[in-house]
Length: 214
Image 1 (cartoon, helix red, strand yellow):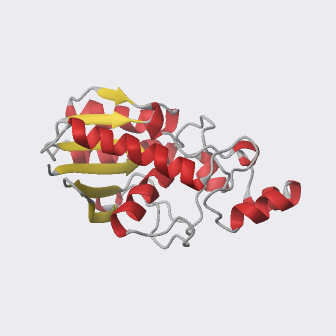
Image 2 (tube, helix red, strand yellow):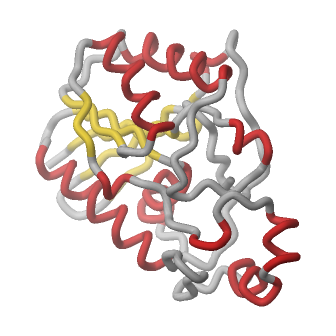
């Protein structure tokens, strides 16, 4: 099996700009995010692929809808492509988290793979959930090219799986809105082919932050 998956983080949202933890809160695209979605749709209209999958959260679904309009593909909804659940942290900035939930934020910041904040998922639970979904998509489309619209930490999951990066290691790779991130699934491994391709956003604008996921 040699399947190509092109993973795309949704376009920018207002909470991205405000540095608020989104998780599974259903936030819409910003004006810039909608323009980014249209731009990535036009880029992929020139790149043949066989199937289009998306998280069912609005920011990903609307990004996928722009790709569908440009390419003619139907969007296939996958709940397990959702972002990690951050429980009580959702809607808060990191400063607000540390003030309201100092103990919980301290454990979260330690990158303990098995710590789940109240109402949330641990890194290990999220990693296993999202990687299983991506594996299933790859198996269902052996030898094909598939586009998957999802969230920043799902990109991070596949980056770590391909490069064998521990869950407690600090993230170094940027998680860029509306970027193309290409992986190949072989019989026994994931291979990262390209990361953070935003050439199609030259006129729209690239949303850049540090390594923290918001």
